[in-house]
Length: 206
Image (cartoon, rainbow, N blue to C red; front, side, top):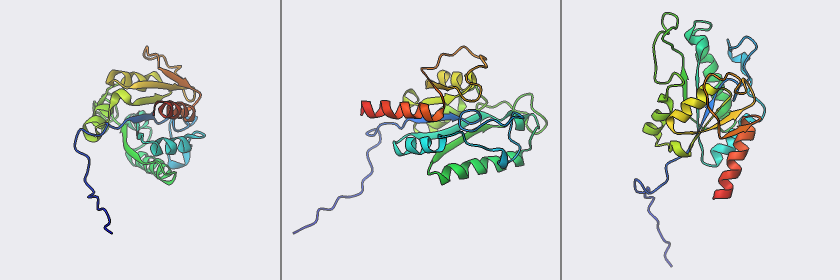
């Protein structure tokens, strides 16, 4: 009797589908926005209800998760880069502790009109599309099958410009900013609700 040996060959390039992603806005979508309008320390960070569990289920279902957002509090000198680093590390640790594998975090801490040391234009400054195309270049993401999820029109129009599908949430600004004229394909009460809908759709189409 012989055991069959299967060599652990990797799939040939181009024979597996490109991964799909969730590009999740940070403040107002994943995290509650503090009353002052920005977080000054890790203690100010509060994950909105159900978000960690929903993202865990999304990752288990094969979605790649990215964070994105403009961090104007750093760009305008309301908090220091060191304070922002502490906040980022806390958020990443909470995600990891919940079993959420974060692919990348695209937080833009500069602006052309920022304070000294934070003055710079950037392809990652929303509504620019650098975050999305970087994910394509580095991770092979299929933007046409990916979603951007946010509470303002800023991130949604950036995703639209990059070819992503858009989902709005009623938390945070609840799309009340009306900075851009964008009509998301999906609007849910919160991030967890939106992810539930996307997971259900994926199950039905499997």
